[in-house]
Image 1 (tube, rainbow, N blue to C red):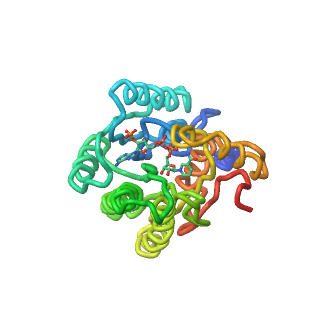
Image 2 (cartoon, rainbow, N blue to C red):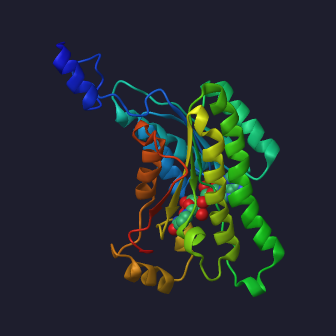
Length: 279
Ligand code: NAP
């Protein structure tokens, strides 16, 4: 191969060692995605696998068939990334708000995959009500899963990444965490907390080559939003500049960017993926 051809292939993201075989952009990387048996988390796991990463899928209460289907779909996404590469996928049950369960999950994943390059804290719940009526327990449940859970997972991930002196942490927040939302004081507080957490971790971990960023989705078509009244969905569509709800894959695309080499000089940032709902 000529020097010019080698340089051109590298520039195009192709494997310089062969004639045309594409080099998956996350080839050789290992990712762990929480809440990845369904919804946005599953789309993220599929997308990272399609980019060549081996993926550990976390779930909490999804039934075995749902988890089994998720594993197969992530493996298929990985197999399509490059005919010559088969990505590895494993699933781990853990409640992200439980220190011991999360500790065991990271230990098992590290022993099976040998390293951790990308951690996406995606798990989340809602317990909507007006603040004046909200039970303290509803507030705490949401904070524990959405914020404490992300902190526990980020702490475990950072320990592995610090040893490697590189890594990507991505939190899945929400536009509710940036702008607030009536009826979601608990959820908005937990999602706003992720922004402060990400910016602090970005400052703490940046010198070791670890970036920490946040994706803030708007109204995305998943089980979470299918439970909402039709009027709310219609109102979001009417207010969004792009006049439609988002797809889980569109959030996954943003996460994949933060996880990629192309985002190496971006940390502590929040990216809205909301179709222009909050301009
Ligand atoms: P979803 O379909 O309801 O899925 C929620 C996921 O979180 C499930 O995979 C669930 O796992 C997992 N989870 C919940 N509690 C958990 C726990 N304690 N430990 C581990 N996993 C847990 O929701 P989604 O729409 O995909 O949402 C994914 C993320 O995006 C959430 O953080 C959500 O707040 C955020 N988000 C969603 C939207 C939207 O419009 N859909 C908008 C903004 C932000 P199991 O099923 O196995 O329990």
